[in-house]
Structure formats: C-alpha cells, structure tokens
Length: 317
Image (tube, rainbow, N blue to C red; front, side, top):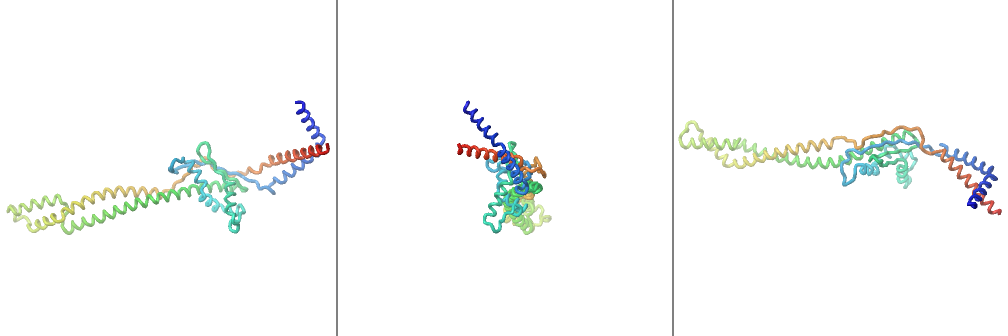
C-alpha cells in the first residue's frame, strides 16, 4: 500500500513540476481539436428517422412480418431505387462511371448513412444521416416509398400469375359454353326441338290420336311424324347438350366470380407500411460531437506528453 502511495505521490510531483509544459500541450491540443473538428474539415451530419410497422406482407414460410420487412429493406433492388431517385452517386461525390469500384463504394456509403433496425415492438426504425438535413428527411421518405413499390411490384407479379391462371380457366369454360350453346341452338333451329320432355309427350299423344283415328281431321300427321323422327334422331343429343349447358353455366358463374376477384386483387394499390413516427427535418447535428472530440484530444495529448516526460526522466536517471 505504501508503494502505491509513493508511486502516486511521485507521479503527482512530476506532474506539478512539469505543469507548465503540460498546460501548454493541453491548450494547443484543445485549440487544434476545435479547429480540425470544425465544418471546414469535418462536414457535420444531421439525422432524420421514422418508425414503421409491416402491413399486408402475406406469409413466407415461417418468417414473421418484421423479418420479411427487414429482408426487403436489405434488398439490392430497393437500395438501387433509393440511390437513383436521390442521385446519391453525385451527392456522395463517387464516380461510378470511370471507377471500377465506384458502385461498391456507393453501396458502402449508403449502408453507412442509411440504417434500418428492428425495434423491440416488432417495428422497423429507419435512420438516415446526411450533411444536408433536408436530404436526410427526403431519403427517409424515399426509403419508405420505394419499400412499398418494391413489395407491391412483387405482389403484383404473383397476383398476375393467379389472374392469368383464373383467366385461362374462365375463358375455357366460356368457350365450351359458347360451343355447346351453338350446337344446342342448331338442333333447336334445324330440328325444331325446344323442350324434349314436353315435345316428346305431345308428339306421342298426337301420334296415337292420328293412328287410332280419333282425331285425324285435327292432327297434322305429316308434322307429327317429322317431329317424332327429329326427336328420335336428335333427342339424345339435345338432352346431353342441354345438361352440359346447365353444368357449364354453373362453372361459368363460379369462374366469373374468381376472375372478378383476381382482377380486383391485381388492380388494387396497397401499402405495406404503417407509419408510426413520421420523419422530420432536424437542424441539430449528430456528428461530429465537438466537445467529445476536444475533450478526448486534449486528454490524449496531455497524457502522451506526461508519458514522454516520465520516459525522459527515467532515461536521465
């Protein structure tokens, strides 16, 4: 314990003996750190942020909505849209045309300035830092807008696939119904068969009256025989086609509903974020923290100077 006290006493004594150079070093370091942390050397950065909840994302495997949302925020497609919309290559002063690594640096800069993190309430916090407070604000809105557009485009692709499948089936049923209806109409027109059950019964009554002599004067024998022949030749086809029309009409109604619903799903415009906390334009800089830079720089310089003094004293002794 006494050795530790002696050591502390010696260090304090050395510091007091050399307080003038240490103070000078501290002042110089403070002045230089103030100078080099100024906007002339370090561009100040401002922050804008928003909090959004996922919505209408659907189900993918066992991923939760927030997990899906975080995946979308990391997608290259979304980043490219935000970069292009905000002209970030020029804004970050990165040459993506002549520099082979320009695109790589551009995405690095994007990832450094655009942060999306999951909150404990299963929402996403979007934070953008930039030297221009209005640019940071616009980029947060741009990220949200392009998130909705990217997800919407993907959902539209799947909705279009479903719509085309339903449309194909609907058109097939419609074609079959038109075809069968045409055949049925031809039988009705050419063979004068309107209702097989009713006509067959009436034909049979007329046929029997004609040949038992009960009503020869009132019955058109030739017409009855002609209709009887038509029923015998085309009656079976008429019944089959009539039943097919009935079933196809039921199928037509079903697929028409499916087609209308699929069309609505494809055409609807949905959003996939619920905005909880809106972004704002903040003129309070978040970087650099000048007082921290000055404090650390001054302390570091004084400490280093003190170590040098101790080292020189040790060499002399």
